[in-house]
Image (cartoon, rainbow, N blue to C red; front, side, top):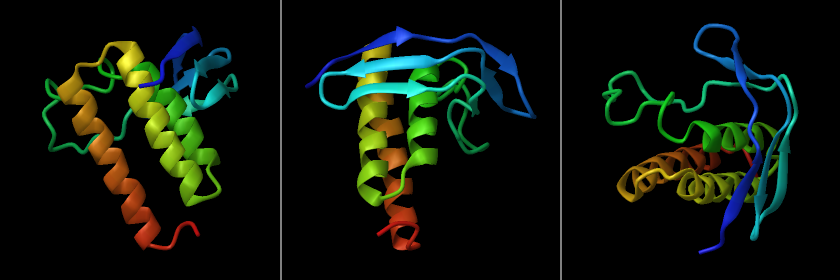
Length: 126
């Protein structure tokens, strides 16, 4: 499995309801995917987790917070299904670097992959 490094992690300020804004660039280096730079003032909700999921199980403020910033950015800038799939794999890799437990990583990765596939079926991308 390829490895990555969080080169720069920004602090966050409160944005609109349920969202946070980066105060500077966020930088992640991946052996497989290269350098990913999220610009300052990027708005994120860390992880879009349905309300019915217990927060002790997946808390976006505690589990994969930094990984989710890169995933959100890559998803918003994706112009193809292939780019969106890459975003999901960056998320998985970064969660490992961030120290997210394996079972939680697998669950969160499965959820984002299912959503990406759902969006493909809805013809969001070619």
